Structure formats: structure tokens, C-alpha cells
Length: 267
Ligand code: T3D
Image (tube, rainbow, N blue to C red; front, side):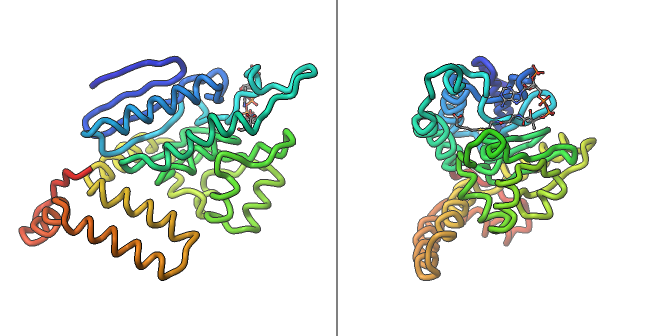
């Protein structure tokens, strides 16, 4: 087990699974400019580790992430100098979300507690989201005069539909994990007592699956949401052509024929 510890962030790799833990529990793991930069750096480092086949993103303490740290002087609209939030998004949140969405391995958000603002967007940028039943999701933006960001206006209507996206975004109510699952916002709400075991089980399952095919699947599903059927069929053919020549396909078919579990290795 290896461990590096930049401030407010823990990165641990155990076997094929990397776990990044946002670690500012006293501030509900709210994001400062420094933490965003550290998180992008940590994601880059995990992406470069060839033996990592699943990334878990979670939070320390009772929260997953409360979004932007509203006490960070870099964003606080205190005094007479308003801050350029567009630049903060362009230089921080945008690269962070794009980095997370393009990781070369499946990603799992383990939402251990409340997620608010950009904290929800971070979770929704992952491939699977599992949440403790006691966790909640809050579109906290309207309460402070902002619009949902970090991909929320893209994700929410796609996952939950326009009516629910608007209800969540305008009203900013706390959405319990169970209801989030019912709305299709997340993969699963899990009993608090079994949450850790379920995260371990899911991450091990994801790590054992053919990484390259999973990552291509994510890209195709994201592209398909905005494209035509013909474009999707063409993109599927191109991806399948590539995967058909790769080792995992040969291994998968051989394992099927030999009635054994496959051992996938492609990244
Ligand atoms: O600004 C830009 O750069 C643009 C980008 C914006 C992206 C965004 O994410 S904007 C949205 C920012 N986030 C919020 O507005 C969420 C604010 N927090 C809350 O609504 C609530 O705290 C929660 C719903 C997350 C949790 O509520 P609750 O009742 O469980 O906890 P609490 O008592 O409100 O908070 C506990 C502590 O965490 C408290 O500190 P204290 O009083 O014990 O010293 C609270 O101030 C602190 N905290 C919570 N959220 C943040 C925070 N500190 C800094 N920043 C926060 N976002």
C-alpha cells in the first residue's frame, strides 16, 4: 500500500484500486482553490498509474463535499472587490470535472454524507455514484445567488429530466439518497451499516472488468446523449473495431469457452 498526503487530500492505492479522500472534515470537505489544484494533480497521478483499474472518490467525516469553500478569500465577495467567478470555473472547476470524466479507468463516487453545490457535481462526474442512505444532495447555488455549475446544468436534466432538474436547482432542497436513487440521479443508496462493504465490493468488481472497454463505454454514452443514432452507430463501430483487436476481448471469449473467470489486463 502506497500513500501520499498533500494537504486536505489523501490518495491511497491498494492493489488495482485508488482511493482519493477529500480530507477537510471541519469544513465538510469544501473546495478551496488549493484543494482543487491538488485534486487535479492527484487525478493526473492516478491516471498515470498503469496498474490502477478503478478510482474511488470519497470524503472524510460526515460529508462528501460541501462544494466551493465560501470562506476562501479567493471567492468571497467581501468588501468592494467582487471576484471573477468565471475565471475560477475556467481555471479550476472546468479542468477538474473534465479530468474526472476522462479518467482512463472506471470511477466510483462513494458519497459518505452530504454533498452540496460543486460537491454534487463532482459526484455526478463519476461513472457510478453510491451513497449512504443518510447522505443528501443539495443544489446549494440558488441560495447564494448563483447558477448550478461544474457540469450540473448538463448532468441534472440528463439524469433526472427537466422538471426535476429545475425543481432541484431552483428550490435547492436537500434530496435524500433514496430519493436520488429513485430519480435516477445516482446508482444506489446503500444502508449506512453496509456502505463501506458495498463500496469495496463494487470497486473490486469494476477493477476486475475490462478497463479499456468500460472507459470506451463511458465516452460513447456521453457522446450518444448529444448525437444522432447514426453517429452513435458509427462511434460504436469504431470502438468495437479497436476493442476487437485488443487482448481483453480474446481473454473474455477464451474465459467464456473455458467456463472460468476472465483476467483482464488492457488499459
Ligand atoms: O464561487 C465560485 O468559485 C463559483 C463556484 C461555485 C461552486 C459551488 O459549489 S457554490 C455552492 C457552495 N456551497 C454551498 O453553498 C453549501 C453551503 N453549505 C450548506 O448549505 C450546508 O452547510 C450543508 C447543506 C452542506 C450541510 O448542512 P449542515 O447543517 O449539515 O452543516 P452546517 O452546520 O451548515 O455546516 C457545518 C460546518 O461546515 C459549518 O462551520 P462551523 O459553523 O461549524 O464553523 C459551516 O459553515 C461549514 N461549511 C459548510 N459548507 C461550507 C462550509 N464552510 C465553507 N464553505 C462551505 N461551502
